[in-house]
Length: 214
Length: 210
View 1: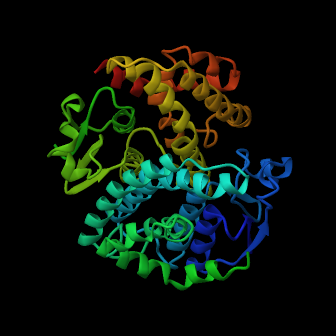
View 2: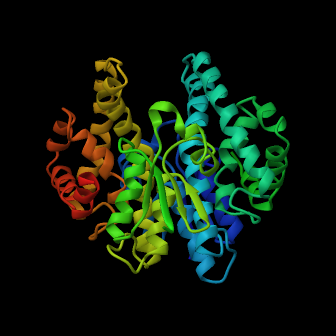
View 3: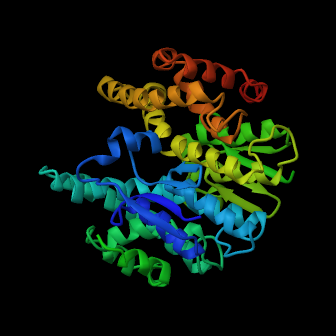
């Protein structure tokens, strides 16, 4: 069964799902939602995602939204079928993976999301972004990245010695930081963080996402 | 004692963990971290949570931070004890996973903003900004409209049974129901009934009596 992913190739949350499906070898079809014209807020998409966002998935009759819930589901499916395990082997490993998934959602994503709004989305809508707010976020991000640097000095990946969804979930936002965000120095100045980024962003699954036509 | 929680009575995040432990009927040691004097930035907590926030958690050798990662661990590790917080069926678990994300990102954004503005600021000797409260209420209303539709179809957020997805809401729902924001819940009958059911849970009563 080919999973249907509703989203766009250039949007962070759909990218999170697509990278995961590529990693696990689950085939999918991307059904494009035109974000520029606000298609995500149209009634048809609200049936799939009541908050009017992307991505959502349809796997036969089974439907889900929230990218991080989707990747957890497929990671669990793969692991339980004896396929690629991106969750962790033991209860304790899985707990550490969950811990760093939470860190991404609570400490990392909100800062990046705010910067995306100011640096990309508002200008696209013909408005001026708040550069003071961006500066404030950047300052807070420096402290957050110090914590990541310390963690990655002790373990190769965020959850432990293996690549898991805790690392994968960071791919789209970190790419933004390095590119449109113009803040690659934040990553490059931190040796372990930089090595981790080079490692995870060169994975075939991520390169495939990057190669998808805009 | 094998399980330790480093927390504070005002912290909704810490209460989330204590509630999960109470639902499971598990014993634990609670270590008070004095937020007023910045103890969260010092040992013993800073070694457990490098972000210097409560709660911190220990179960034997395992140390964790982030309340929602801790509750997930408790739900899985002690699946056979007390209240089931997560189902075994992967698809049912995934649906609960959706609403765990919604709580963490959408509900909490509005809920924490309001809780901080109305309840926390006065404690710190600051003035509540009514403009922020209005904005927060509008934000919360938009989210609760979606909850109303969901709870019209399903008894709890994740499905027919109480789960971690509902549990995560309880500390902030409880805070907000002590304020004028209660009206936002009461205007939506399915949401109001759900909130009342959650706050009446014996485990929540037990946490607050302590």
